[in-house]
Length: 422
Image (cartoon, rainbow, N blue to C red):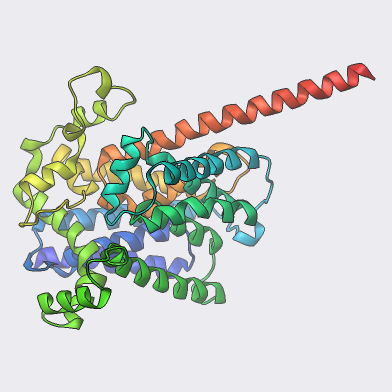
């Protein structure tokens, strides 16, 4: 009874405060994503068909801790930050457009090169990824730079850049991937509605858009390969699924509510209940996530992936990959102290970037995709993937920034030569 009071108190108090503050920003996105990804733990029962089981007490305490810490940091943020700038008031200074276009064209060129070499006639997304790797093309560079430039284009209100950046992400989505596309879209929507009130027309507009996108991506996740598999029709596959789950309503409930959210809640609940600390080493993960370390050490990719530990030791019985759980990894590494430390670090980072991403600074402007990732998608990821996002952002900024500086230098040099000639 006490454990239920703790979770209900933390969720309801957080909900009341975010309702009271009445604004859309990345702090709200984190609150909503935490609720969505863990609503089954809040309710006390995990449902990942065909499995059903009670949420562990440890997982309930963890989620309660995250809610309370995030709300307290949000209160502190609101006490300090009085300037409630909106999207309409963003400084549309486009001094760093060249960096964004470099990022965009990295993705565009590599996407078209990849399609030219390996084609696009793949049923499963894994086949496409393997084909790219076999052609010595790293799949991450086909979409991640474009995702960065897409979010940047929203902040700076650059429509042409937005359209160009969206092309590689459409190909990425067509091949069956969603993570970066959804993360970028969440960032764009949050930026567009930044600091809007809940009773505004803009809030109603984006709420409708979010519902449409949610329905689309939920259904597309399980049907994208049906669209390209000529051996069976979509209607036949649909009837087969309905027959397996007993009814159309059961299939829809699984697709919309259990697939994504149930899996992550299951990961957290089973991981904490089974105490995976004996299978996991946090220092190895941190060291192995540093650039180039795995190339010159005995640390392998599996050694730093907590999702592998979940698959092997906290799997209710599935044969496919289960994703990760950032909070379960924090708990496995340092128990509840790890959850507290990680929660404070994540919420403070979100609060800081939430207040600076729109400023005319290239680091802040191009960190918005990372901000969106922390706010929305972190719950289902491993710690090493959080490091990977940060490394990708820095590396791409260094590459594109170097080209930007070189262009500025050459331009200045040519201007000086022109003035000398006169």
